[in-house]
Image (cartoon, rainbow, N blue to C red):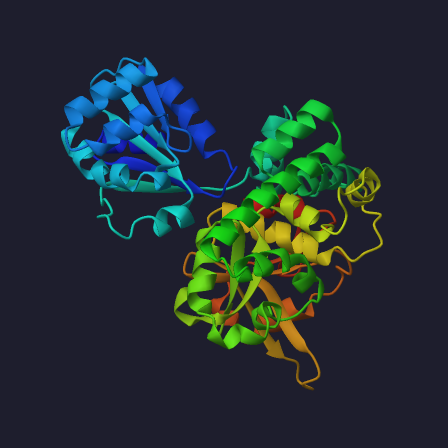
Length: 434
Protein backbone atom coordinates (compact mmCIF):
# COMPACT_ATOMS: atom_id res chain seq x y z
CA UNK A 1 0.00 0.00 0.00
CA UNK A 2 2.90 2.34 0.76
CA UNK A 3 4.48 1.47 -2.58
CA UNK A 4 1.22 2.36 -4.34
CA UNK A 5 0.96 5.69 -2.50
CA UNK A 6 4.49 6.83 -3.26
CA UNK A 7 4.95 5.38 -6.75
CA UNK A 8 1.55 6.26 -8.20
CA UNK A 9 1.14 9.60 -6.42
CA UNK A 10 -2.56 9.76 -7.19
CA UNK A 11 -2.32 8.45 -10.75
CA UNK A 12 -4.33 5.34 -9.87
CA UNK A 13 -6.82 4.29 -7.23
CA UNK A 14 -6.05 1.32 -4.98
CA UNK A 15 -8.54 -1.57 -5.10
CA UNK A 16 -8.24 -4.00 -2.18
CA UNK A 17 -10.09 -7.21 -2.96
CA UNK A 18 -10.62 -10.15 -0.65
CA UNK A 19 -13.12 -12.47 0.97
CA UNK A 20 -15.70 -11.20 3.42
CA UNK A 21 -14.48 -10.42 6.96
CA UNK A 22 -10.82 -10.65 6.00
CA UNK A 23 -10.12 -7.11 7.27
CA UNK A 24 -10.12 -4.97 4.10
CA UNK A 25 -11.99 -2.03 5.64
CA UNK A 26 -9.92 -2.08 8.82
CA UNK A 27 -6.58 -2.04 7.02
CA UNK A 28 -7.73 0.69 4.62
CA UNK A 29 -8.79 3.00 7.44
CA UNK A 30 -5.66 2.28 9.50
CA UNK A 31 -3.53 3.12 6.46
CA UNK A 32 -5.48 6.33 5.86
CA UNK A 33 -5.11 7.39 9.48
CA UNK A 34 -1.34 6.82 9.41
CA UNK A 35 -0.48 8.19 5.98
CA UNK A 36 -2.79 11.17 5.32
CA UNK A 37 -3.67 14.48 6.95
CA UNK A 38 -7.37 13.61 6.75
CA UNK A 39 -9.51 10.86 5.30
CA UNK A 40 -13.15 10.12 4.60
CA UNK A 41 -14.85 6.71 4.56
CA UNK A 42 -17.97 6.13 2.48
CA UNK A 43 -19.42 2.71 3.35
CA UNK A 44 -21.92 1.90 0.62
CA UNK A 45 -23.29 -0.94 2.73
CA UNK A 46 -25.02 1.56 5.04
CA UNK A 47 -24.60 4.94 3.38
CA UNK A 48 -27.26 7.56 4.23
CA UNK A 49 -29.67 8.77 1.57
CA UNK A 50 -27.74 12.00 1.21
CA UNK A 51 -24.77 10.02 -0.14
CA UNK A 52 -26.89 8.41 -2.82
CA UNK A 53 -28.22 11.84 -3.81
CA UNK A 54 -24.63 12.99 -4.22
CA UNK A 55 -23.80 9.86 -6.25
CA UNK A 56 -26.70 10.60 -8.60
CA UNK A 57 -24.86 13.78 -9.64
CA UNK A 58 -21.33 12.39 -9.52
CA UNK A 59 -20.41 13.91 -12.89
CA UNK A 60 -19.98 17.19 -11.00
CA UNK A 61 -16.97 16.21 -8.88
CA UNK A 62 -16.72 19.62 -7.21
CA UNK A 63 -20.22 19.31 -5.82
CA UNK A 64 -19.84 15.59 -5.09
CA UNK A 65 -16.85 16.06 -2.80
CA UNK A 66 -18.35 19.22 -1.30
CA UNK A 67 -21.44 17.26 -0.26
CA UNK A 68 -19.41 14.35 1.13
CA UNK A 69 -17.48 16.72 3.40
CA UNK A 70 -20.74 18.07 4.79
CA UNK A 71 -22.25 14.61 5.26
CA UNK A 72 -19.24 13.11 7.05
CA UNK A 73 -17.99 16.30 8.71
CA UNK A 74 -14.49 15.82 7.33
CA UNK A 75 -12.37 18.50 5.68
CA UNK A 76 -10.56 17.12 2.62
CA UNK A 77 -7.23 18.69 1.69
CA UNK A 78 -5.96 18.56 -1.88
CA UNK A 79 -3.19 15.93 -2.32
CA UNK A 80 -3.13 15.34 1.44
CA UNK A 81 -6.39 13.41 1.87
CA UNK A 82 -7.70 10.01 0.83
CA UNK A 83 -11.29 8.97 0.19
CA UNK A 84 -12.13 5.34 0.99
CA UNK A 85 -15.03 3.81 -0.92
CA UNK A 86 -15.94 0.78 1.18
CA UNK A 87 -18.05 -2.02 -0.38
CA UNK A 88 -17.53 -0.36 -3.76
CA UNK A 89 -19.38 -3.20 -5.51
CA UNK A 90 -22.67 -1.68 -4.27
CA UNK A 91 -22.03 1.61 -6.07
CA UNK A 92 -21.17 0.81 -9.72
CA UNK A 93 -21.55 4.46 -10.73
CA UNK A 94 -18.82 5.46 -8.27
CA UNK A 95 -16.57 2.67 -9.53
CA UNK A 96 -16.98 3.95 -13.07
CA UNK A 97 -16.26 7.53 -11.95
CA UNK A 98 -12.90 6.51 -10.47
CA UNK A 99 -11.35 7.19 -13.89
CA UNK A 100 -12.36 10.85 -13.70
CA UNK A 101 -11.50 11.21 -10.02
CA UNK A 102 -7.97 10.02 -10.73
CA UNK A 103 -7.68 12.40 -13.67
CA UNK A 104 -8.94 15.20 -11.41
CA UNK A 105 -5.97 14.31 -9.13
CA UNK A 106 -7.43 16.11 -6.14
CA UNK A 107 -7.23 13.27 -3.60
CA UNK A 108 -6.12 9.66 -3.37
CA UNK A 109 -8.72 6.90 -3.52
CA UNK A 110 -8.95 3.45 -1.96
CA UNK A 111 -11.69 1.01 -2.92
CA UNK A 112 -12.51 -2.15 -0.99
CA UNK A 113 -14.87 -4.97 -1.83
CA UNK A 114 -15.44 -8.59 -2.70
CA UNK A 115 -13.98 -9.34 -6.12
CA UNK A 116 -16.88 -11.63 -6.97
CA UNK A 117 -19.51 -9.04 -6.05
CA UNK A 118 -17.56 -6.40 -7.92
CA UNK A 119 -17.57 -8.55 -11.07
CA UNK A 120 -21.31 -9.13 -10.75
CA UNK A 121 -21.99 -5.38 -10.65
CA UNK A 122 -20.04 -4.08 -13.64
CA UNK A 123 -22.30 -5.20 -16.48
CA UNK A 124 -23.41 -1.71 -17.48
CA UNK A 125 -20.36 0.35 -16.57
CA UNK A 126 -16.90 1.00 -17.95
CA UNK A 127 -14.34 -0.63 -15.65
CA UNK A 128 -11.64 1.91 -14.79
CA UNK A 129 -8.13 1.04 -15.92
CA UNK A 130 -6.72 3.50 -13.40
CA UNK A 131 -6.69 0.93 -10.59
CA UNK A 132 -3.87 -0.80 -8.73
CA UNK A 133 -5.23 -4.07 -7.38
CA UNK A 134 -4.14 -5.85 -4.23
CA UNK A 135 -5.48 -9.15 -2.94
CA UNK A 136 -5.91 -9.47 0.81
CA UNK A 137 -5.85 -12.90 2.44
CA UNK A 138 -6.48 -14.11 6.00
CA UNK A 139 -3.65 -13.44 8.44
CA UNK A 140 -0.60 -15.53 7.69
CA UNK A 141 1.23 -17.28 10.51
CA UNK A 142 3.67 -14.43 11.08
CA UNK A 143 0.82 -11.92 11.42
CA UNK A 144 -0.94 -14.35 13.75
CA UNK A 145 2.15 -14.45 15.99
CA UNK A 146 2.30 -10.64 15.97
CA UNK A 147 -1.29 -10.53 17.24
CA UNK A 148 -0.25 -12.77 20.14
CA UNK A 149 2.60 -10.38 20.96
CA UNK A 150 5.33 -12.59 19.48
CA UNK A 151 7.77 -10.93 17.08
CA UNK A 152 10.65 -13.33 17.80
CA UNK A 153 9.55 -16.79 16.62
CA UNK A 154 9.27 -16.23 12.86
CA UNK A 155 12.63 -14.42 12.42
CA UNK A 156 14.30 -17.28 14.32
CA UNK A 157 12.53 -19.78 12.06
CA UNK A 158 13.84 -17.92 9.00
CA UNK A 159 17.36 -18.08 10.38
CA UNK A 160 17.05 -21.79 11.13
CA UNK A 161 15.74 -22.52 7.63
CA UNK A 162 18.41 -20.43 5.90
CA UNK A 163 21.18 -22.11 7.88
CA UNK A 164 19.55 -25.57 7.75
CA UNK A 165 19.81 -25.68 11.53
CA UNK A 166 17.76 -28.21 13.51
CA UNK A 167 15.64 -26.95 16.40
CA UNK A 168 15.60 -30.01 18.67
CA UNK A 169 12.64 -32.22 19.49
CA UNK A 170 11.42 -30.22 22.48
CA UNK A 171 11.46 -26.89 20.65
CA UNK A 172 9.81 -28.46 17.62
CA UNK A 173 7.07 -29.94 19.80
CA UNK A 174 6.37 -26.51 21.33
CA UNK A 175 6.38 -24.76 17.95
CA UNK A 176 4.04 -27.39 16.51
CA UNK A 177 1.59 -26.94 19.36
CA UNK A 178 1.67 -23.16 18.83
CA UNK A 179 1.05 -23.70 15.14
CA UNK A 180 -1.92 -25.98 15.79
CA UNK A 181 -3.54 -23.06 17.60
CA UNK A 182 -3.25 -21.11 14.35
CA UNK A 183 -4.84 -24.01 12.48
CA UNK A 184 -7.75 -24.07 14.91
CA UNK A 185 -8.41 -20.32 15.08
CA UNK A 186 -7.37 -19.45 11.55
CA UNK A 187 -6.44 -16.08 10.12
CA UNK A 188 -9.81 -14.31 10.12
CA UNK A 189 -9.31 -11.21 12.31
CA UNK A 190 -12.73 -11.52 13.93
CA UNK A 191 -12.04 -15.10 15.04
CA UNK A 192 -8.64 -14.13 16.42
CA UNK A 193 -10.11 -11.16 18.30
CA UNK A 194 -12.68 -13.48 19.86
CA UNK A 195 -9.86 -15.73 21.09
CA UNK A 196 -7.88 -12.79 22.48
CA UNK A 197 -10.97 -11.50 24.29
CA UNK A 198 -12.34 -14.78 25.65
CA UNK A 199 -9.54 -17.38 25.51
CA UNK A 200 -12.40 -19.77 24.69
CA UNK A 201 -12.17 -21.90 21.55
CA UNK A 202 -15.89 -22.66 21.66
CA UNK A 203 -16.59 -18.92 21.36
CA UNK A 204 -14.09 -18.79 18.50
CA UNK A 205 -15.97 -21.59 16.78
CA UNK A 206 -19.23 -19.66 17.05
CA UNK A 207 -17.58 -16.64 15.44
CA UNK A 208 -16.29 -18.79 12.60
CA UNK A 209 -19.78 -20.24 12.07
CA UNK A 210 -21.15 -16.72 11.68
CA UNK A 211 -18.50 -15.98 9.04
CA UNK A 212 -19.32 -19.20 7.19
CA UNK A 213 -23.01 -18.24 7.22
CA UNK A 214 -22.07 -14.94 5.57
CA UNK A 215 -20.14 -16.86 2.92
CA UNK A 216 -23.15 -19.12 2.45
CA UNK A 217 -25.37 -16.06 1.87
CA UNK A 218 -22.90 -14.77 -0.73
CA UNK A 219 -22.81 -18.11 -2.54
CA UNK A 220 -26.62 -18.20 -2.62
CA UNK A 221 -26.67 -14.74 -4.19
CA UNK A 222 -24.26 -15.64 -6.99
CA UNK A 223 -25.80 -19.08 -7.52
CA UNK A 224 -29.43 -19.32 -6.32
CA UNK A 225 -29.47 -23.01 -7.31
CA UNK A 226 -27.23 -23.73 -4.31
CA UNK A 227 -24.60 -25.62 -6.31
CA UNK A 228 -21.71 -23.31 -5.37
CA UNK A 229 -22.65 -23.55 -1.70
CA UNK A 230 -22.77 -27.35 -1.87
CA UNK A 231 -19.32 -27.43 -3.45
CA UNK A 232 -17.98 -25.20 -0.66
CA UNK A 233 -19.56 -27.11 2.21
CA UNK A 234 -18.35 -30.46 0.84
CA UNK A 235 -14.64 -29.55 0.81
CA UNK A 236 -13.70 -31.33 4.10
CA UNK A 237 -15.51 -34.53 3.20
CA UNK A 238 -14.00 -34.57 -0.29
CA UNK A 239 -10.47 -34.10 1.05
CA UNK A 240 -11.05 -36.83 3.64
CA UNK A 241 -11.65 -39.27 0.77
CA UNK A 242 -8.04 -38.75 -0.32
CA UNK A 243 -9.18 -38.70 -3.93
CA UNK A 244 -6.94 -37.55 -6.77
CA UNK A 245 -9.43 -34.83 -7.69
CA UNK A 246 -12.47 -32.95 -6.40
CA UNK A 247 -15.61 -34.83 -7.48
CA UNK A 248 -17.76 -31.79 -8.26
CA UNK A 249 -20.26 -33.55 -10.49
CA UNK A 250 -21.21 -36.11 -7.87
CA UNK A 251 -21.87 -33.32 -5.37
CA UNK A 252 -23.95 -31.15 -7.68
CA UNK A 253 -26.26 -34.03 -8.59
CA UNK A 254 -28.06 -35.49 -11.55
CA UNK A 255 -28.54 -32.22 -13.42
CA UNK A 256 -24.82 -31.49 -13.42
CA UNK A 257 -24.60 -31.84 -17.19
CA UNK A 258 -26.71 -28.67 -17.54
CA UNK A 259 -24.40 -26.59 -15.35
CA UNK A 260 -21.89 -24.11 -16.74
CA UNK A 261 -19.13 -25.55 -14.58
CA UNK A 262 -16.46 -23.21 -15.90
CA UNK A 263 -18.45 -20.16 -14.83
CA UNK A 264 -19.41 -21.73 -11.50
CA UNK A 265 -15.80 -22.58 -10.66
CA UNK A 266 -14.57 -19.18 -11.82
CA UNK A 267 -17.08 -17.53 -9.49
CA UNK A 268 -15.92 -19.68 -6.60
CA UNK A 269 -12.28 -18.84 -7.30
CA UNK A 270 -13.10 -15.14 -7.49
CA UNK A 271 -14.83 -15.32 -4.10
CA UNK A 272 -11.36 -15.86 -2.54
CA UNK A 273 -13.06 -18.11 0.01
CA UNK A 274 -11.37 -21.15 -1.52
CA UNK A 275 -7.98 -22.11 -2.94
CA UNK A 276 -7.79 -24.15 -6.13
CA UNK A 277 -4.90 -26.50 -6.82
CA UNK A 278 -4.95 -27.55 -10.47
CA UNK A 279 -3.63 -30.75 -11.97
CA UNK A 280 -0.71 -30.18 -14.32
CA UNK A 281 -0.41 -32.58 -17.24
CA UNK A 282 3.27 -32.02 -17.97
CA UNK A 283 5.29 -30.70 -15.02
CA UNK A 284 7.70 -28.16 -16.47
CA UNK A 285 8.46 -24.46 -16.35
CA UNK A 286 5.34 -22.58 -17.35
CA UNK A 287 3.02 -24.67 -15.19
CA UNK A 288 0.00 -22.55 -16.08
CA UNK A 289 0.35 -23.61 -19.73
CA UNK A 290 -0.15 -27.26 -18.77
CA UNK A 291 -2.86 -27.02 -16.13
CA UNK A 292 -6.03 -29.05 -16.52
CA UNK A 293 -8.98 -26.81 -15.64
CA UNK A 294 -11.27 -29.82 -15.33
CA UNK A 295 -9.12 -31.56 -12.75
CA UNK A 296 -8.41 -29.85 -9.47
CA UNK A 297 -8.47 -30.03 -5.70
CA UNK A 298 -10.36 -27.54 -3.62
CA UNK A 299 -9.31 -26.18 -0.22
CA UNK A 300 -10.90 -23.67 2.13
CA UNK A 301 -9.11 -20.32 2.05
CA UNK A 302 -8.81 -20.26 5.84
CA UNK A 303 -7.96 -23.42 7.79
CA UNK A 304 -9.76 -22.21 10.91
CA UNK A 305 -12.97 -22.08 8.87
CA UNK A 306 -12.06 -25.46 7.36
CA UNK A 307 -11.99 -27.12 10.80
CA UNK A 308 -15.36 -25.63 11.71
CA UNK A 309 -16.75 -26.91 8.39
CA UNK A 310 -15.37 -30.38 9.16
CA UNK A 311 -17.50 -30.48 12.33
CA UNK A 312 -20.46 -28.59 10.87
CA UNK A 313 -22.93 -31.27 11.97
CA UNK A 314 -22.49 -30.13 15.57
CA UNK A 315 -24.17 -26.88 16.67
CA UNK A 316 -20.88 -25.72 18.15
CA UNK A 317 -17.62 -27.64 18.03
CA UNK A 318 -17.01 -28.60 21.65
CA UNK A 319 -13.86 -27.43 23.37
CA UNK A 320 -12.88 -31.06 23.93
CA UNK A 321 -12.53 -31.55 20.16
CA UNK A 322 -10.46 -28.41 19.89
CA UNK A 323 -8.26 -29.48 22.79
CA UNK A 324 -7.63 -32.88 21.20
CA UNK A 325 -6.81 -31.22 17.89
CA UNK A 326 -4.54 -28.75 19.66
CA UNK A 327 -2.48 -31.50 21.25
CA UNK A 328 -2.61 -33.85 18.26
CA UNK A 329 -4.71 -36.49 20.04
CA UNK A 330 -7.83 -36.63 17.89
CA UNK A 331 -8.14 -40.14 16.50
CA UNK A 332 -9.31 -39.07 13.04
CA UNK A 333 -6.68 -38.83 10.32
CA UNK A 334 -5.65 -35.20 10.15
CA UNK A 335 -3.65 -35.42 6.94
CA UNK A 336 -6.18 -33.45 4.96
CA UNK A 337 -6.16 -30.66 7.57
CA UNK A 338 -2.42 -30.26 7.11
CA UNK A 339 -2.86 -30.22 3.33
CA UNK A 340 -5.39 -27.41 3.70
CA UNK A 341 -3.12 -25.27 5.86
CA UNK A 342 -0.16 -25.86 3.53
CA UNK A 343 -2.29 -24.79 0.56
CA UNK A 344 -3.32 -21.68 2.49
CA UNK A 345 0.21 -20.74 3.51
CA UNK A 346 1.65 -21.25 0.03
CA UNK A 347 -1.17 -19.23 -1.56
CA UNK A 348 -0.83 -16.34 0.88
CA UNK A 349 2.91 -16.29 0.12
CA UNK A 350 2.07 -15.57 -3.52
CA UNK A 351 2.32 -19.02 -5.12
CA UNK A 352 0.06 -20.48 -7.81
CA UNK A 353 -0.46 -24.10 -6.86
CA UNK A 354 -0.47 -27.28 -8.95
CA UNK A 355 -0.29 -31.01 -8.31
CA UNK A 356 0.55 -34.12 -10.32
CA UNK A 357 -0.23 -37.84 -10.16
CA UNK A 358 0.97 -40.78 -12.24
CA UNK A 359 0.61 -44.56 -11.94
CA UNK A 360 3.11 -46.80 -10.17
CA UNK A 361 4.91 -49.41 -12.32
CA UNK A 362 2.39 -52.14 -11.40
CA UNK A 363 -0.52 -49.80 -12.12
CA UNK A 364 -2.30 -50.61 -8.86
CA UNK A 365 -1.68 -47.27 -7.20
CA UNK A 366 -0.71 -43.72 -8.05
CA UNK A 367 2.22 -41.62 -7.04
CA UNK A 368 1.17 -38.09 -6.12
CA UNK A 369 2.95 -34.80 -5.56
CA UNK A 370 0.68 -32.68 -3.36
CA UNK A 371 1.95 -29.28 -4.52
CA UNK A 372 4.30 -27.97 -7.18
CA UNK A 373 5.59 -24.41 -7.06
CA UNK A 374 8.15 -22.69 -9.29
CA UNK A 375 11.35 -20.90 -8.36
CA UNK A 376 14.01 -19.45 -10.72
CA UNK A 377 12.66 -21.21 -13.81
CA UNK A 378 12.69 -24.55 -12.00
CA UNK A 379 10.17 -26.69 -10.13
CA UNK A 380 9.95 -27.32 -6.39
CA UNK A 381 7.80 -30.40 -5.66
CA UNK A 382 6.25 -30.63 -2.20
CA UNK A 383 4.95 -33.70 -0.43
CA UNK A 384 2.87 -33.25 2.75
CA UNK A 385 2.73 -35.83 5.51
CA UNK A 386 1.07 -35.64 8.92
CA UNK A 387 2.77 -38.91 9.89
CA UNK A 388 4.80 -41.74 8.30
CA UNK A 389 7.51 -39.28 7.36
CA UNK A 390 10.34 -41.78 6.94
CA UNK A 391 9.52 -42.55 3.30
CA UNK A 392 8.83 -40.18 0.42
CA UNK A 393 8.57 -42.45 -2.61
CA UNK A 394 6.38 -40.12 -4.66
CA UNK A 395 8.83 -37.28 -4.19
CA UNK A 396 11.79 -39.47 -5.09
CA UNK A 397 10.13 -40.89 -8.19
CA UNK A 398 8.98 -37.46 -9.37
CA UNK A 399 12.46 -35.97 -8.99
CA UNK A 400 13.99 -38.91 -10.85
CA UNK A 401 11.45 -38.60 -13.66
CA UNK A 402 11.82 -34.84 -14.05
CA UNK A 403 15.38 -34.42 -12.74
CA UNK A 404 16.33 -31.65 -15.19
CA UNK A 405 13.38 -29.52 -14.01
CA UNK A 406 14.00 -29.70 -10.24
CA UNK A 407 15.50 -26.93 -8.10
CA UNK A 408 14.50 -27.87 -4.52
CA UNK A 409 12.45 -30.76 -3.16
CA UNK A 410 10.53 -30.51 0.09
CA UNK A 411 8.78 -32.85 2.48
CA UNK A 412 6.50 -30.90 4.82
CA UNK A 413 5.80 -32.81 8.02
CA UNK A 414 5.51 -32.48 11.82
CA UNK A 415 9.08 -33.28 12.88
CA UNK A 416 12.27 -31.23 13.21
CA UNK A 417 14.03 -29.52 10.32
CA UNK A 418 16.60 -31.81 8.70
CA UNK A 419 18.13 -32.83 5.39
CA UNK A 420 17.55 -36.31 3.97
CA UNK A 421 19.77 -36.62 0.92
CA UNK A 422 18.45 -34.09 -1.58
CA UNK A 423 15.15 -33.72 0.28
CA UNK A 424 14.68 -30.88 2.74
CA UNK A 425 12.41 -32.08 5.57
CA UNK A 426 10.55 -28.95 6.69
CA UNK A 427 8.29 -28.57 9.77
CA UNK A 428 4.80 -27.53 8.68
CA UNK A 429 4.99 -24.22 10.53
CA UNK A 430 7.83 -23.13 8.20
CA UNK A 431 5.78 -23.62 5.02
CA UNK A 432 5.24 -19.91 4.43
CA UNK A 433 9.02 -19.33 4.38
CA UNK A 434 9.79 -21.63 1.44
